[in-house]
Length: 209
Image (cartoon, rainbow, N blue to C red; front, side):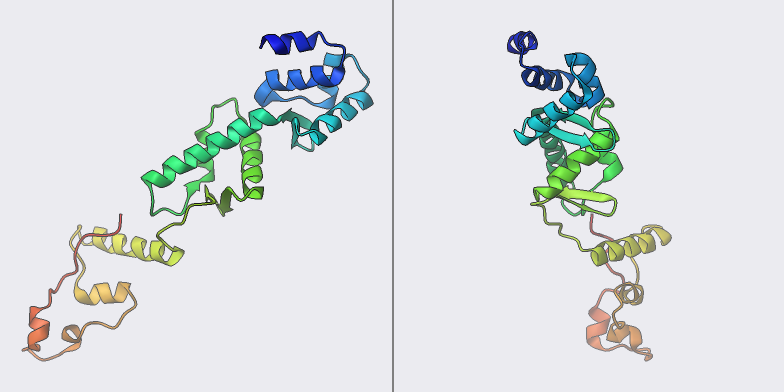
């Protein structure tokens, strides 16, 4: 902090602008704000920002507003997002990802949704995160469930709930699985074969978590 304050007294406007960006963190700065803070022309402010971007010290987080932010601060937000996703995957290994809106709520209120979206874009470009629809996951995470698995899981849970949490019959389980019913279910005789008489008539009530 002392070094930053000393740099604000420096005559080099680029150095002063870099300090302003570090201090303003999530707020960042636009060329017009830099123009007022540095007492330079608007074109000079734009050129200073371009120089900082080329040197890797600043990022354009909002192209429409030409708002820039300190690269180091944005990397902090990226690390936070990856940590949140890692914890989510550890607690929910069979879920394909965390909801985008839920991830945004895990950041402080002063971090805007636009800034979180920019963070996710950066992580996707680096291959460190994957966004699929309304879900986001870490790039190194592999889910144990496919989309079809989750659909089947939902059907089984619905069937169990509909029966008052009593397991479905063998015929119902076969229907849920899109499989032919077992031989004992198809038999119309009053005395099923021995192997059918030994088979349980109800599927287990345990379902995937």
